[in-house]
Length: 228
Image (tube, rainbow, N blue to C red):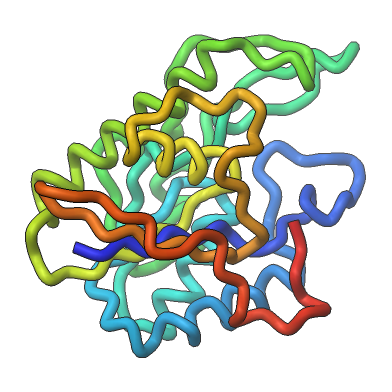
């Protein structure tokens, strides 16, 4: 099995548009980045497309899905660190439930949804309130556990096949997934496996070995379109 891990296109929060929003959409540039990423995958023989349940990844996956003629499959554990959160005064943040099944289908009409995306949303963990920049350790641990859960899913359904899997995720949780693949502890500094917007990493995954073929490939983007 070959895995192509893709960070979403530039979001409004990535661009620095204020005020920050809990679940930001793609910018116009982010839409173009997603198209370039999709075009770069056309000749790779991708057979399955996964994405997180957050707006920017859904929008990125929808664009890629149209280019590759694949339905996006949502895996909730691919969500970004901390889920969907918003400021609640004095820089304290709080979680929101995330997009509902109906809202996700409005973004991706051909999406395949698991049961843990409900009519009320998909985030049902403890409401962790924290100061921005002082994230509880439990959030990093959850990201690591989510990575292990996705690897278990891949192992059950795709490992030791000829399938080529594309995964649209995030900067933080995408790095956490690579950590989990190679048995590394959670990266609390967000510095080990960073990705530009629509940067692509390729992993070979079999029962016998795991190889990182490349990290954060951005050659599909014009130089002026590279963002972080």
